[in-house]
Image 1 (cartoon, rainbow, N blue to C red):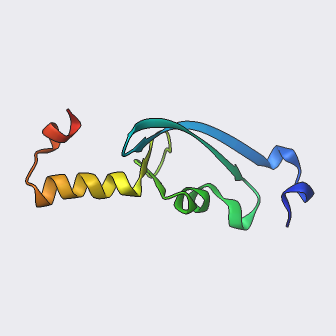
Image 2 (image 1 turned 120 degrees about the vertical axis):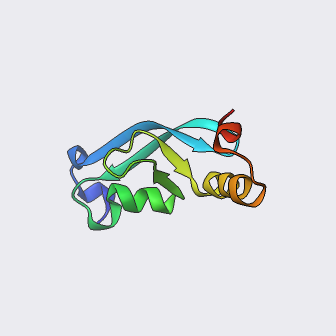
Image 3 (image 1 turned 30 degrees about the vertical axis):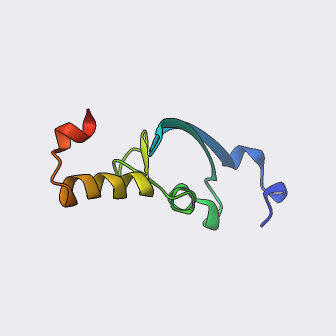
Length: 85
């Protein structure tokens, strides 16, 4: 189903912070409540973004940032507190 064929009221635009490798950026996420292939989780995964909490998507994190934090914590033995500073 094309975007033009769907009522505009079914689309939602979220403006939320996203943690990326170069800092926190505001992401504008546009998704459709009634479209099977444009639900919020699918749109987030296509953009390589994940919600920090499963219940509420107030903050997103990019896959590259998750990998970077993993490498610093597990490979370089850096503490979580040092990473957050």
